[in-house]
Amino acid sequence: MRNRGLVILIYVFLTIVAFFSVFPLFWMAVSATNNSQTVLSGTLLPGPHLLDNYNNLIANQNVGGAMKNSLLYSLSQTLLSLVICSLAGYGFEIYHTRNKDRLMSILLLAMMVPLAATMVPLFQMMGKMGLLNTAIGFVLPSVSTPFLIMMFRQSARSFPHDIIEAARIDGLNEMQIFLKMFFPTMRATYAAAMTITFMNAWNNYLWPKVIMQTNDSITMPMLTANLIAGYVTDYGMLMLAVLLSTLPTVIIFFLLQKSFTEGIAGAVKG
Amino acid sequence: MNQKQQTATTPYRRKMTLQKKQNMIGWAFLLPAAILILWMCFYPMFRALLLSFQSGQGARLSFAGLKNYAFMFKDSIFIQALKNNFIYLLIQVPIMLALALILAALLNNKDLRFRGIFRTAIFLPCATSLVSVSLIFRSMFAVGGFVNVMLMKLGVIQTDINWINGSAITARAVIIIALIWRWTGYNMVFYLSGLQNIDSSLYEAARIDGANGFQQFRKITIPLLRPTILLTAILSTNGTLQLFDESFNLTRGGPTNMSITMSHYIYRTSFENVPKFGYAAAMSYVIFILVAILALVQMRVGDKR
Image 1: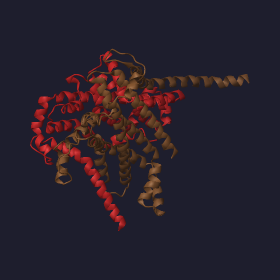
Image 2 (image 1 turned 90 degrees about the vertical axis):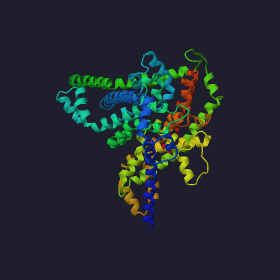
Image 3 (image 1 turned 60 degrees about the vertical axis):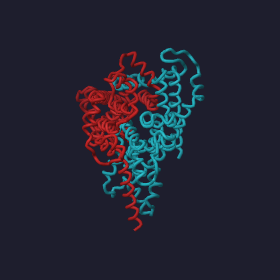
Image 4 (image 1 turned 60 degrees about the horizontal axis):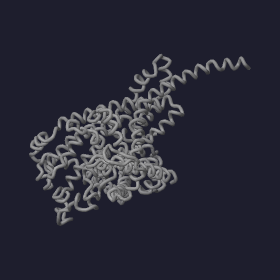
């Protein structure tokens, strides 16, 4: 009897936590269909103002441009990151020597370096190279991360050495082994790395805020944040912008939830 | 003897060259990534160190020794920001990690129904960008907004609370609530994947010995998850000391800098009004040193227990 009460308590607790987890997103979506006044009145019902909010938003802001920028920056970062970090993870593990291990532990220190410390020098470097307001400028500082290298290094550890030896005897060169043997077998790792990198790139805010100084180069999160700059906030329009900038990552979340969870815990598993 | 040596060295030498070749190929594989980290992380870190010994406005800088570091302790906004970061760290991180741990332990139970739905729901906030989180919570907690309306309907409060600009405590509370909302599911995922490595027969044996759920949690789950707990503690500490988006967009640092974070203040010093790159760099080294020290402390404590 006591046990049954406990079970019910667990379900109630989990339901409450799940409710609070989903509620702000539900509220955001509902608010995108209401005008500022009804949002503030505390309504939880969808309203008729979705189209008005949309028209207001595109009249004030270059939403299409920001969407295109965000996509361009995030996709380039994802593609380049996967190539560079998977090559490195493979190199560190398959050809490992003591010096390579030493280098890896030095590179890991990069995880502790705060962006607040590097942003001014990086900003100056990008300025000198003429990379302000460009996708390359966005991508360069975060394309190679110790986290992703570790993740691919971890998966290379589970890649059987016999296969590599056999492929060498069959006359494949080292690059071909990587492309034809490693890449296809590690699809799950690539999917996980892809999801996590895309999400991080899409949601990145501080760095683009530093280097994207023209209106034509801003990202979706930047555009959304700009909407609260005025004295009066149009909450309906604001929540629609939030909805639009959240939609791509939420879609990816639902399509690739398994990869996403593996991506988060990716470098951890031994 | 001589004969023997020769037969032994020839294949050995050939193997060495093959190994050398492969060693070089290995370096070629990892070099682009390594160079990028050295160039885009360590080099700017070094440049920031040089900057921190310089003072001046904009591009006109001159050597100033430790002046920037000395100035920090007289700068009340910086001290407030430092305090705020520690308030967020000390209140939010323990609550969030405990909640994540409890949720993971509950969801690890295979007999639980709707497990997938619960997990997805609790994990969903991770798909939201920090800017979106900040703006959603800013709007929900607005004067006359949803939270105030609901609390008044429930009779908890009589008049509107100005959560975001009213007082330091409420502004910080909203940031902490938003942080817990955004990151609990994220940490839960670490624990869930750690729990999968724990042999379920351990729990069965404990149950046969008469241990209840709470005892199992204390005696099995927590000790075996210690490495994962340590990792999440380090990651959360690192993240909390670098908070920017929430301070910048949720409360805008207000009321009068009472909820501002160090990163936010560094950004303001670097890019708003009159840029003071040297002073900003000095402050950023404080974050770096704190992150490093706290990571070391946590590793020590985590290993000892």
